[in-house]
Image (cartoon, rainbow, N blue to C red; front, side, top):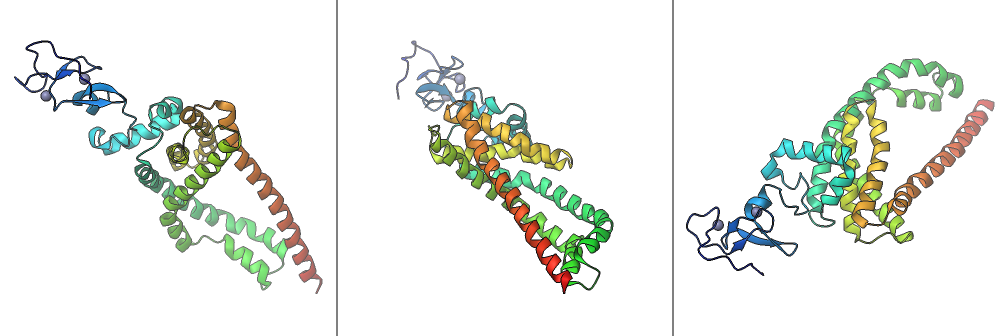
Length: 281
Ligand SMILES: [Zn+2]
Ligand SMILES: [Zn+2]
């Protein structure tokens, strides 16, 4: 540790009468050996670190002891949602990824609740409306396939409650898979300047925007905003430019959409064929 030699007779700003060991490069106060430390090669005092005046790469969530639990949660969600470039510029690329996973699981609880409740009531409202169409397509009551499809439309309290408990885990798994796919994308286009952990950590924090699924209609918009936040986050953390980050974020969903549309199309043909042939007997 390299310290500036203190001027004679200087004392620590915190500890009365304790001789100073140097000055804080951030606030300029004298500090004793106990009060000063180094961060990114610069001498800083404890007061500057705990107040968040110097940037130690911690997210508001990482500083929850100091900011208070609710304040830390809210500042993290707000930072990621409204100022992603600044949020990710301030975040250290690696470290505390496990804590980030805990954060994502926690803030997914309210969205999971809203998701289950709206899902249940949507089915409750739509099932009677859709039944005549399903019967038209798949056959009258008594037809096994027709009954199965009608039954699958019914609101189901058990699956809604199960969904509520599984939701946070599902979101975390989504985020981890997204992180892996994005890192692969960055590697493919030569934009991976940081290790895999950095991409995963960025992705996990970017998923904080899915918190807004608590507003039923904003839910789908929050998933679109996630893509934008991911581009900001990955280009900032990897310092690899918006173009490569955009590729890394979009190649997988675009590919998936094509696969899902193609798959649905084929499935619809298969089901129509099945229904057609069973109707012929
Ligand atoms: Zn200081
Ligand atoms: Zn001191």
